Length: 186
Image (tube, rainbow, N blue to C red; front, side):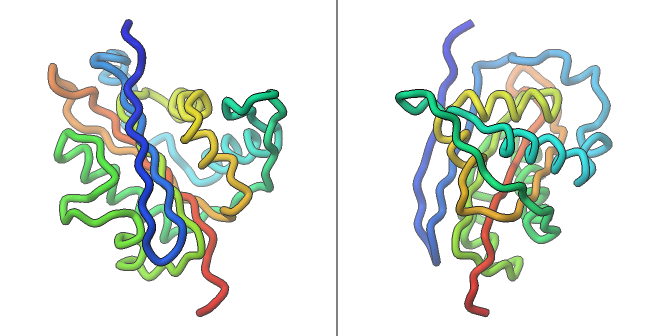
């Protein structure tokens, strides 16, 4: 298997926004077609348990010296979850991983449209992973994604996946994780 292709991007709008996308050569996980629909397996409790355990345990995130970064647990935010769900569905519909939606809006613009006022927001996207554990492990294995997951600047999250069509041109399962910190000025 060839090495992964990473598509990191940096966008600044109404605060710091760091986005990172993870794409592996196709096909990565042919078992995606045989699994249950991703939406049936993603309760907020399951997501929080997995991600908060990772943040409390700590992760190295490819830093020289290897000292793990620890971060406080996160809270589920329905607005962030709605933004994540819309992006995952958009990517599945378009059969394309992207940090811009079908209206060409970046994360900051999508959060503003949802009414989420933030001081910091970050987004991880991925395609082709069959489970929450698989996508989180992949994000932890990527420096930019790991830094987003372990950021002490974020306090809330929303995560969603959407199943697209599994075909020669697509891997079928699209993931979006949005992490943020609400603005203190309302």
